[in-house]
Length: 171
Image 1 (cartoon, helix red, strand yellow):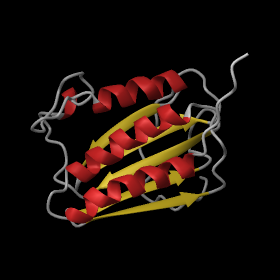
Image 2: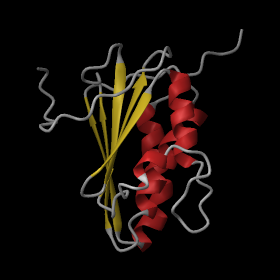
Image 3: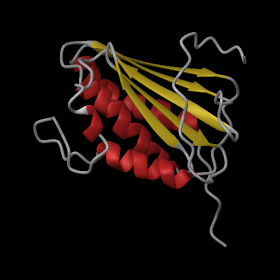
C-alpha cells in the first residue's frame, strides 16, 4: 500500500513565506502568517498543498509592486465547514481584481499579468477540489482568497465568506 501522506500546514506556509520574502522585500511587501486553534496534520501531499499556497501567495505578492502587506491566517476548525477542515485566508493590499476580470480568474490561460501563464488559480482550484476543499475570491481593498481544506480528503465543499468579525467566537 502507498504511504499515507501527511502535511504539516504550518511548516508549508512558513516555507512558502520565507521563499517569497526575498522578492517581497524588494517590493516593500511584508508577509505575515497567523494561526488560530491547533492546526492538525492534513492527509494530503505536501507537494500539492505547497503548490496551492505558493500560487495564491505569489499572486498576492506580485500584485503589489509598490509595497503593501500579505497576510495568511489559518483557522482550525474552519467555521461553518461541513466536515473538519482548516480555513486559510490569504489577503493582500494590492489593486484587487477588476469586476470585468473576476468571472474569468479560474479560466485556464487567463492572465492579466505580462508573461503570466494564467494557470495559477485554475491549478489551485483543481487541486483543492481534488482534496474535497474549495476556494472563494473576493476583491475589495485588495484581494482576499479564502480556502477550505479538509483534514481528511473527501467530496468538494465551497467555503463560506469570512465573517466580518473574524474574532473566533463560534456563533
